[in-house]
Length: 148
Image (cartoon, rainbow, N blue to C red):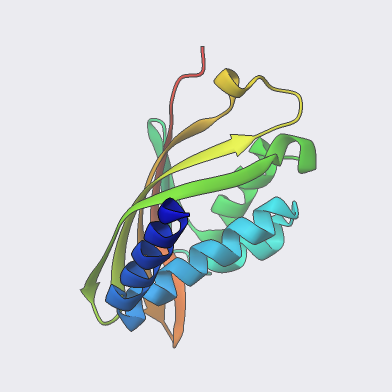
């Protein structure tokens, strides 16, 4: 009971400290997580800036462009089983300006056919910006930890 009350107070404190910009960035990620968990890559991609200037980096490579990012996701995650269920922990969400937010966090996928210790997981760093009145991810650097 005490733990529940403490967690509720902490969540209220975090929400109270959020600026409009950080709240908007958190919302983008929540919508993306929900779309991912429905196995809807098209809806998931709505969280990204639909521009040739978006940059996505992973492992030792990076690519520019919304279409290239979409293609990478479709290749790596061809269906619901490969996508699994996404969850993340937002370690730091910091307003850089009224139109830009830095986000650092941990991600993990849970798949029915994988042991928990083999589940894909890693870190991400995002820049979420307001572009034409809409909050979108403009920079994404996602790394995967070894699951060996």
